[in-house]
Image (cartoon, rainbow, N blue to C red; front, top):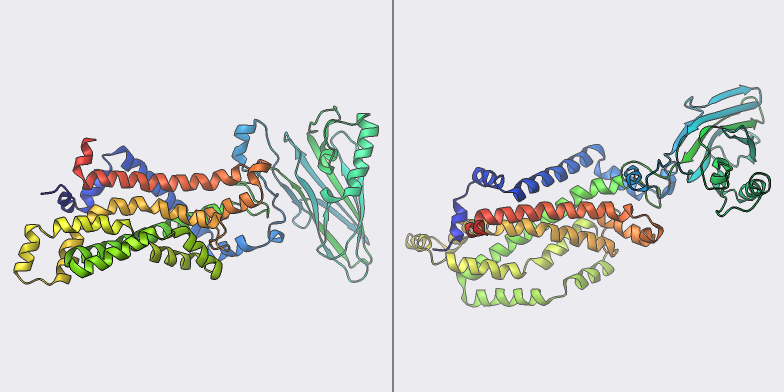
Length: 464
């Protein structure tokens, strides 16, 4: 008798108990629980339709997030406190506002204790007027008492935005002033608007820490008009995952990439393995022409170029991720697994219990589905589990190549965007590292679980 049938004696409880006797089994279960927890949180916290909408939304939806901001844990490696985004709204009472007739004065005040300069500064206006738009004078007060006049800005719409960092005339004016009046010479670093407003005049690229203020003095066309504004001083870190080139939090795709990856990998592996098992059982049991036909089809499938066919299909047809899953399953049904499982079927069909079933008149279908497949199934479960990461990596690879569904937030889409935007060249390593870590954790979880199950269903491996 072969060692293989021993696997059929294991019940579910016995398998779980046996899993906990292996370190790889414990680690696999811990990683799977982590991935399942992330998946449940993603589904509950951000419904699928909302996640897709947020991910497909343009940059205007995320305007108050910093662009290409690193995650906060990056501070562990850079050794300094990086700036967070500061948002102050006069409409929410986060700034002092005085309105007298046709004049509005708004003053923002905040402490800046970070070791680096902000990435951008922007004013978001919210005005109410019927005739002429408000004219706003913008002043900046530093902790050392120095005050800068930044602009005399006329609103172009009620929800206008003044991108202070993109005001090149202001940048030239500030640069000239600082070089001539404060540094008394050209520094070794470029002077941008953010650096000019937060620069300590030491000759080095250092931040002046302390309390900063911005004052807006608006002139309204009539007393019935009104003005509010949000001051956003963008940081260089944002949350635990950071942001991308469209200011989107990467957490959306990292979170939702987990249930999508698990669903894609498990479905593809399960359906493919079960289909191959049925094909192998039919081929091995009936033999003859049926066996020859199924084996020739399997051999043709084995030599077909899998990835080029997927690329060709995606080029000619606009497919979503679930259609892509169906195509992957169809292309994988007749694979090498058919031949491996057929070999197991050929052994089992000669066992005494099969001969007994034939003796009492069991049909071929009954023997295949009630005797052979249940006997072989425990033996292929480790391979089924171990195959999940390959399908997860396949989906990520297809998304990286631009073949996947562009509307669904997945790990592969993050990597695709990162490489399209030159993330590694620009130093945004987190953009690639985070989805890669999630892919590695998934691979380790299912691989370790597959190894542990293989030792359980094949006792000979316990000796290794």
